[in-house]
Structures are given as C-alpha cells and as structure tokens.
Image (cartoon, rainbow, N blue to C red):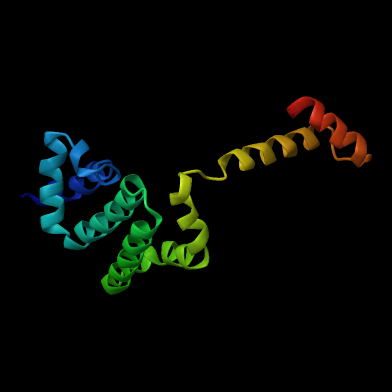
Length: 143
C-alpha cells in the first residue's frame, strides 16, 4: 500500500466504525480489513464498542445484561484505553439506573421532552411571577 493511501484510509473508514459489521458494504469490509491490519488498537476499540452496543440491543433479561456489562467493564479496564474512562465512570455512577433500562426498555426521554417544553414556555414569557397562574396555564396547554 502506498503511503498517501494510508492517510486516505483513516478518514474514509470513519463511517464503517459507526456501523455493525453486518451493515458494511463490500468496500467497507475491505477498508476495515486494511484498517484493522494497520491499526490493531482501532480493531480492539471497535470490538469493545460493538460489544456494548449488542448488550443493549439483544438482552431482555436484567441479570444477563448485568453480567455482560460487568464483563465488558472488565475487558475495557484490561485494554487500558483511556478513551473509555468516561463511559466506565458513567456506568459506575449510574449502574442501577442503567440496569433499570432492561426491565421494560424505557428511558426518561419523555420526561426530558416535557422539561424542555416547560423551559420553552417559561422563557417565552420571560420568567414566572405568579407560580399558581403559571401552573394553571401549563396544565391547560400540556395536559
């Protein structure tokens, strides 16, 4: 492989790293093979990220998910990648909340959306002077 082609390989490979291996095109498969041969650390990091993704996509049982998350956590610690430390810290701090996702596969997205609507409503009227009237208007509009 010529030297300039190596530098073109990395930017052109970024999209395949966001996909699972099953969704790669033939060109992306070839690019991934070359990329992983030249940069084995990228292959390891890709494998770790795909393992975490599959834990969320395939597990319906909370206990199985807990074991897979613990196994993934251990593998990341052994790999020594400092880039995964933010994810490791998030899992450590929010372990029970993360596992609650596997109970009925629901998130707090609806609550976050409602909070955003309340903030937008409040900012439209530049603050709240009368809290009772604000709550009255809020319930009339969004209830």
